[in-house]
Amino acid sequence: MALIDVGTEKVNGRITNVHVGYDATHGVNIKSGIVEFEYRRIHDAKRANVANSKTSSEIFQPHSNFTWQLTFLSDCRAAFFATDVQVAGGNQYALVDNGDSNNIEYFRVIMTIEDEGGTSKTRTYIIWNGRALRNSARIGRDEDAEYVYEGDAEYISYSDA
Image (tube, one colour):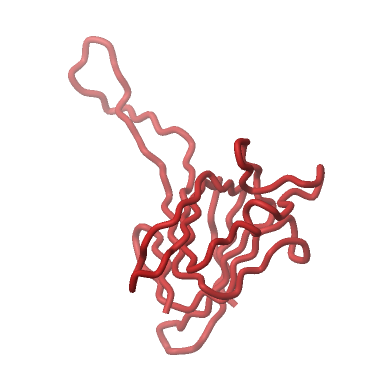
């Protein structure tokens, strides 16, 4: 049983695959060892600084963004360091050693869930304008090594089928 944590709810299900590439047919499809997927919407607000006032009813709210984290039981360097993630240009990898990360044009997390009636569904999370920003290894559950990839996205949405 895998876990999707969206910051406000946890969705239990089985993550069947993670696809990283530039379209549905070009990329890497990770089908095993997926521990969890987490994402959060960041849309902080701050009170406006009004001169000569102790309080302000005005709010300044910059653009929102989403942070994401994928955890695997094996290192997925091939998906993030050696797979072209942009249709134009060639050799544009999600993570580049000693370089800038590139926008992942096709980024999907697919899982099987049950609805409230017990019927199985396929849920597809779509990460729009996602960038992998960091990766790390850590000792995880049962002393197994877990490999964590984290990043940022413009938007994350899902659809059920």
